[in-house]
Amino acid sequence: KVDYKFYPIVNLKDWVKNTQQKAAVIHEALDEFECDLVWLDADAVILKKLELFDKLANDNDFHLYIHRAYHLPLKIDNDGLLSFIRRNISNFLKRRKHPKGEVISNSIYIKNCAKTKELVSKWVALNEHKIEWDQRNLQEIIDAGDSDYVVKQLPKEYARILPKGNQLETLNDGNNYIGQKQASRSYRKTIHNF
Image (cartoon, rainbow, N blue to C red):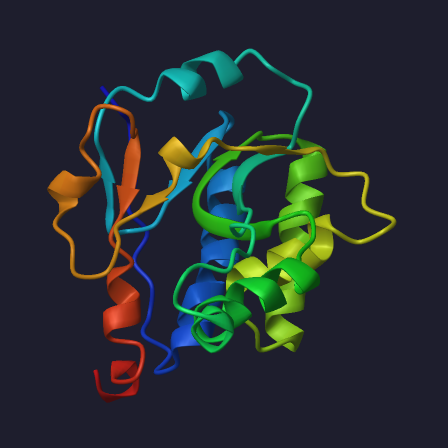
């Protein structure tokens, strides 16, 4: 059994501003509950028992478990250099910008303690002043040179993103725990009309 609570949010008519509400909801939940928390985006699907989260409840040596995507190494294949550049320029730029890996905030295990509350308060404040995707603002805080937050790697099986055009069954191969549909991205350009 998984205890859960849904938090309603207001459509701010802007996809980035809507994503930034995540930090405020987590902040509210940290104050509302005394236990550790798990954040899952609204379109997440739990595919099997979240065994890791049971183990983390007894671990006090971290503030967040979050997934970081390490973009695949570049490789030239038989299609030639131009084709290679077209396919890999995005990954190349992401790797240069995020050498520690790009923070993916669709699934987060959150230790409920004073230091985590401080981190989330900084995240909320940065979102109020910097119009940037929520996970990029979070990354800025945890990757800051003076950051003493302990952030550990959540296995990719707890943050699997459904490939475009595929059905959820492609993730349900027995290895994955949480699947993410990224439904909001389908409406990213039209969200201001709702």
